[in-house]
Image (cartoon, rainbow, N blue to C red):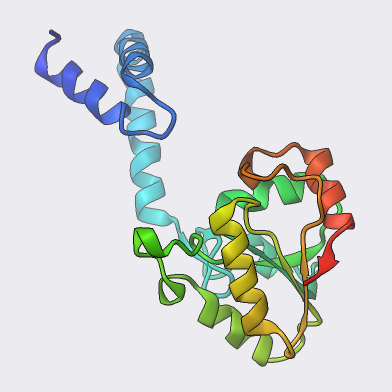
Length: 196
């Protein structure tokens, strides 16, 4: 229907999460109307992200350095670790403004049906951080859905007896993703966390 380069762009854009074919067409047509410099800038931004961004060696958040911004910040409370599934889950917690500890990104949630077992997540690395000492509390902030809850229970079982383990309190709707929660809800959940 469209010239091959346009069709390829639409196909590639439609692979993005939340972007269907119609949205991909609108984005492609928008890009066609933009000056070449704008398209080149977008393309370069994508290449830079792929070339320069890596995982923090301590918490596995995204960074362009050896340690992420939270692990480098000496003002953060390094005795409290908040465990999240993905780096994007850190954003609503930070926007809530009440959490001043550090993070640990698991890289997903347990889902045996999808072939995601404990060895596929960064649970071993979390245990190593706790065993290294200096950690008083681990807050489990996995998503309040089936996979997130099973991951929370598994992580809590692995850490029980080593450190105080808490879970985000109610306020986050069951079946929702933490990434999409509003700041007030996340803030209440942090303040009202409970021990598991």
